[in-house]
Length: 293
Image 1 (tube, rainbow, N blue to C red):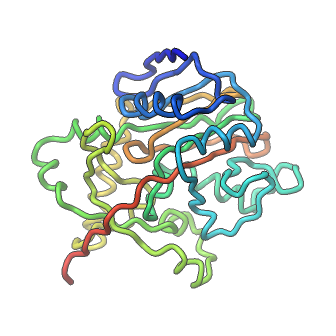
Image 2 (cartoon, helix red, strand yellow):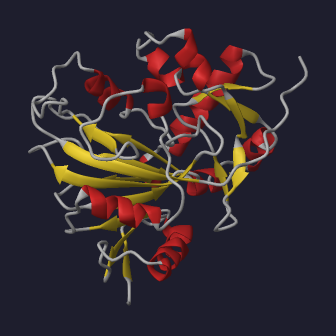
C-alpha cells in the first residue's frame, strides 16, 4: 500500500489516493493517522461505499460516537444508529418538508462547529460520505484552528491562554429558535468545560477550540465572554484559513474535530441531498475546575 497526498490548501487539507476504503486494516488506519496529524482534513474521491463498508472503515479508528442523537432520540432510516443521516430525506424516502426535524438539523449544520465538542469524550474524526448531491450548493467548509491560533498576535495569545469555555449541545439550537426540548433532554447532555487553547495530541501544535457549541467563557460576564468568542471565530474563519469542498458522489472526507471547525453551505432543500457521517470518539479528558464564583 502506497498512499499519495496532494495538498489542497496552504495550511492544511490534502487529497489522498492509492487506498481502498473497502479494505480497512490497522496498517491503513495508522498511515491515515500519521497523515491526519499534518493535514487535519483528508479528501478521498470516487469510492462509493455501502453503509456496512463505511462503518467497517470507521471502526478501524476506534470507538464510535452517537453525539446529538443522545439528546434528539431521532428515528433513522439508516441501518446503524452510529451513522448520522446528513440529508433532506424523510423516513419514507421522500424529500422532507421544511418543517421536518431533519431540515432543522441541516440549518444547524451551517454554523461553524466541531462535532461533539459538547461532551466528554468529544469527537476525534468525522467521516462524511456523499451519496446523492444536488445540482448546486451544499458544499462543506473547513477551517484550520492551528493556523488561526498561530496568526494571533502575542498579546491575544497571552490573554486567552488559560481561559476555559463552556460547551453546551443546545446552545446553537437555541440561537436558531429551536427550543422545544424537555428538561430531561436538556439534562441528558450536561455542559462541559474545555480550555479555549489546547495542544493537539498528534502534532503537538497549539490550536483554538471554539465553535457553535461554545456558549460562554468561564469566569467572564456572559456578554464579554460571548463577544470574545465571536471575535475569535471571526478571526479563525477568515478565507486564508478555510478550505471549501465541493462534493461529488462517492467522496469521503475525513476531518479532525480537535483542531478544525466545519460548516455546511446552503442549498435548495427541494433538491435531494444525501450524505452519511460516521464519527469516532477521542480519549476522555480530565474535567477542568470552574472559576470561583
